[in-house]
Length: 469
Ligand code: FAD
Ligand code: SIN
Image (cartoon, rainbow, N blue to C red):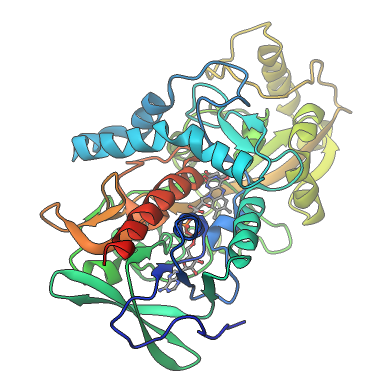
């Protein structure tokens, strides 16, 4: 569906509005903010349908402290820095500002979506690497689709908003030091738009033969949860943007191996919330890790074993849920069962050794023993006595390339910085296209959050620039 430009003149040097590239959550947040300031927005996306990877998000969005949390939360900043690992010491001061902005504005991001935009975010779970539950999601629907569809619907109600799909940006335009707009192709035609520019084009986890192969050749053959599409950081380095952390790629420990096409490189994510709500991971019938550790930690615990034989790199891991976990994540489970990615079965069917492993976990979850892997939070796991005929929900999972922590460097005003650390006039960026916020490991739920926080800031800044021209 390609809409035609009616409200914006193309090939003109007089900006008639701001340009946002990318219709994922970062782009939609920036566009919403621009419209709220009365600035016309021209949103371009190369895909046929808007929403990017954002629409697929299902575990939730972080925020602290919020009224939906039941325990006090003062550790979001510290958890983020700990998870970021040793690279945090490179450009530490700049990263500290970004993480402070992210965490300090997280509660207002939740309220903006929930109270102002009307997206239910009242259900809270604890994901890996978090000290307390702070990942918010709707009670009855999936988080990414709910947020994207709500923002998009409200944007479309504004006469100031114009969306063009199947419109691929191929060049960022510059006049002297200042970014002035973009060149893009649509329906075989090359067009130009001029105005303050917000870049929100997502990451390069789906660019297997391009940026991923360049920065992480060791990940060749890994499946991915991202749609195949090329990374866009090169469009921004062409106008002087600095890159950071491009080698930092998140391999998420649990993508589903679909029994119908086990060798497929495209995997559906087994959302982290399954572990957060109580799910257990088994290899060869035994637990091997604290499932509430960071993704990097769990992935390492899996990939230190030999991969399975086959065309792609994958491992034999089982995720097991009890009835309590199933109920807490019912919206997810309905979809996974319908897709044939999870099945209901008995403990006996899972083979020897599984019953004692699950009983040991159940004892720790009930508070009778310390978990031998150090797990402290057990979500809604309710099963106390494990019998051979006990019913459980299981699926096969394997590590998957999921998210790219690296990208263009921004400051806390979402301005894109050049090699000297100076802001490039006329250019802002937000979301997964940027680098430096998450270091070596992004915490689950913090990507949607960075999209909202830095997307809104970018919208505010681009709005001020438009009004002052
Ligand atoms: P995207 O949403 O990817 O949007 C980028 C858009 O830019 C795309 O629509 C793309 O077509 C467009 N684009 C790219 N290049 C061009 C170009 N040259 N011209 C025009 N348009 C272009 N994070 C969480 O915090 N919580 C979760 O629960 C969660 N679950 C996830 C589940 C899955 C399956 C996946 C894949 C990711 C998940 N993430 C989650 C991560 C998160 O969804 C993404 O990192 C985040 O949504 C990225 O948002 P974005 O706006 O930066 O980019
Ligand atoms: C997941 O649901 O496991 C993904 C969450 C995220 O990437 O933040």
